[in-house]
Image (cartoon, rainbow over all chains, first blue to last red; front, side):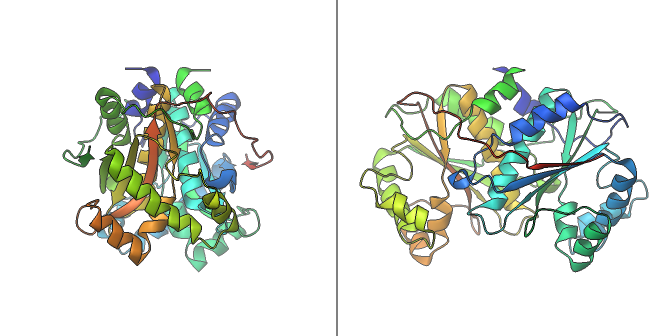
Length: 188
Length: 188
C-alpha cells in the first residue's frame, strides 16, 4: 500500500487537541492542497477563512453549539447538552471554506477542497475534525448576524460550505470506527 | 513535501483514457479509501455503484450528455455540442456514489468519499474525472426513468451525490490549470 492510501486510511476525526497553534508552513501546505481540488469548469469559487484567534474561536464555538442544541436531530441535541462538549473540540484553528452559491457547484468544490485539507493535515501529523455546526448555524438568521458581529465575514454573496477544526492531537490517535460492508454494486 | 501532499498536488481531471479496465485490486483499494472518508455521526449513508460494462457506459454517457445540452449554463451547452465530446471521456469505468437524502449530510459524506477515490486513483497511476452530468441528469424525471430503464438502480430512496470516471490515462498527464491567488483570510 502506498503512502497516500495509508494516509487516507489513517485519517480520523480527532476530538482532543493541544493548544499549540498550527505552524505556518504546515498551514500553507494544507491551503495549497485545498486549492488543488477539482472545481466545476475550474471556477475555484472559494475563499478560505482561517481562524486562529483563541478568544474569537471560543466565542464562535459557543454560538455554533446552539445550532446543535436547537437541531431537530435528537442525537445532535444530546451530544451538545454534555457540559464538556465543544463543537470545535478546543482545537487551536478553524478553517471555513466559503463559496459562491451562483457558481456551478460550489458545495461540491468546497467539500472536495476540505477533504484535501483533512488529508494533508493527517500526512503532517495534525488532527482534524469536520464540523457541520458552522454551516447549520450560519443557515439561521441569528447565526448570520452573529458571524457579522464577530467580524467573521466572507466575500460578497459567499456562504460557508465546509468547515473543520485542526491542531496537534492531545490524545492517542483514534481507532477506526466500524465500517458498513455490502455497500458496493459492480456492473461489469 | 511528503508523498500524500505530492499526490494531492498531482491530481488532475484526466480527459483521455485507454480502454483497459481498472484492475480489481486497484478498484478495491479505491473503494476502501472511499469508505474511510468522514461521515456525519458515522452514518456512512452511501452506496457505491461501479459501472465497467462498455455497452452500458456508452448508453449512459449518451443520455447524461443531454443534461449538458439542456443546461441553462451556456459554457456547458457549448462543450456538449462538440461532436467528439463525451461526458465520461470514454473512460472504462464510472463510479456513482449514491446516498440517503434523509441522512444528516449525505451530499457532504459522498463528496468527501469521492475525493478519497480520486486521490487513491492518482496515487495508483490512474486518471479520474469528476462528472456532474450524472447528478444533473438524474435530477430530471427523464433521467431517473432512463437510469431505471438501463438497470442502474440505487438502494431504496437513495440518489446519486457524486460521480467520477476512472481509467488509465491515454495521454500526457495534464498541466495544472492556473490557480486563483488572494483567496485566504487569516484571523489570528
